[in-house]
Length: 151
Image (tube, rainbow, N blue to C red; front, side, top):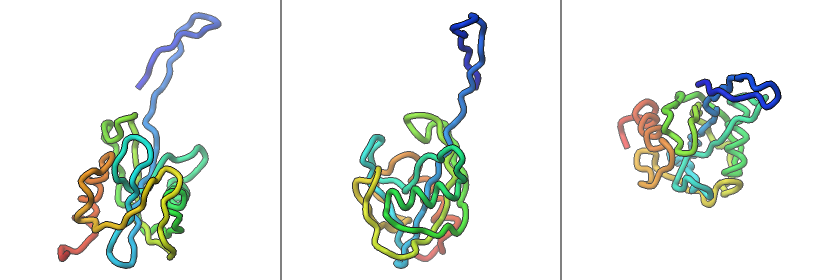
């Protein structure tokens, strides 16, 4: 989307581009068929998949591994991309596009850190009611596409 700005030096119109912010979210599978969710420390509050913004010069994969470590203290191995989520209303703060990865924890115990107030393990078919962003939909897609029909 373009937005016009006025140059303070010449008074001419300069076009300003506004683009969505790239983000990553990670579904971290644990050995007991549970996944890791974090309770967010900052607004918007609620339970969420670990994730965050991609830094300039960083690949999506590197961002996912970094965000998983920062928020859960876990080292992860990315297995595959689940998909991309781009609804302009998915984040109430601004327009984001998230690439969602499925990963396995390489071991260790999850601990809340960075933007996470708390870490919990949940059945992906039965997440908490107070999910942030569009993460309940992402978990529905994950359950439908990636998990067997048997609970």
